[in-house]
Every structure is written in structure tokens, then in C-alpha cells.
Length: 152
Image 1 (cartoon, rainbow, N blue to C red):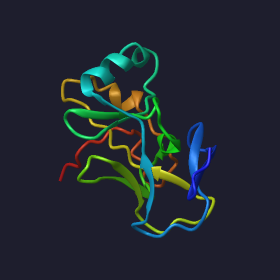
Image 2 (tube, helix red, strand yellow):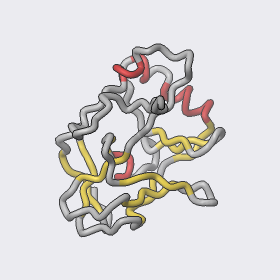
Image 3 (cartoon, rainbow, N blue to C red):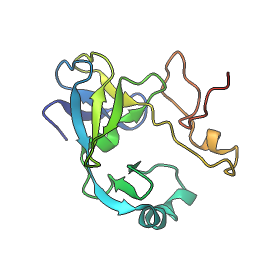
Image 4 (cartoon, helix red, strand yellow):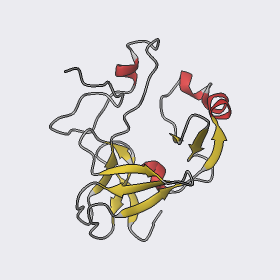
């Protein structure tokens, strides 16, 4: 799969990843995260069985009511891997569209990554940290894709 700014290739982080095809500038809008827009209830029902066997989904939460399921009608943005030292971030515009933007200049051939910062409820088991283990290899890897607010 190709997009004018990025393409899908094998990733050292996990499975397939998205890589820059040309130099990208800090704050540049790279690609829109696309897929079917569904309610949280629909997304939960859709992935309930799958999540018993795997933590892998293409779900992107837009707001309290809306989730984008990149597994349905999605594009290559769904393959952007997690990194604790990400070079991209998601930005939601006023229309609820999700765009991936560069956090810094990115060289051609470099893998695009985002910090997923997965949220879990306080009553979720501590095992979630392990279930969503991180393989990014970054110097400051926190060993999980789950986000815990830093304690000061």
C-alpha cells in the first residue's frame, strides 16, 4: 500500500509499519486515519471475541461516543506502530477527522510512529501493562503501550 507521503513495509517494531517516502517537516500533516465510524458499543461488540485472544485492533477513539474502526474501510494509517519516543501524533480537527502529524522532521525511509497512550480503567487488571507490552526499542521505552500519568 502506498500514499503520496508514506508507504507500508515490514517493520522492525511489529509486523508491518508505515514509512516516509519523502522528507517530512515538523508539524506536517502526513495522513488521515480512516475507517468506519461507529459507536463505542458497536466497537466493543465487534472486538469482544477477538480481544479474548489478541489485543490487536485498529480502533481509534475520537470522543466519548465515536470510534474509527480502521479494520473496516481503513487506509495504511492503521499500520502506524507505537513508540514511546514517537515521531508523529494524532490531531482531531473540529469535524472529528483524525490526522497524523509529524512531531519533528522525518527522513525518507524512517518509520512513522505514535505513542498510543492506551487508557485503561482503574478497575482493569494490572496485567494490562503486560498485555499491551511495548517492543519499540526506544532508549526511554516504558515497556508498555498503556499510559500511566507520571507521578511527581
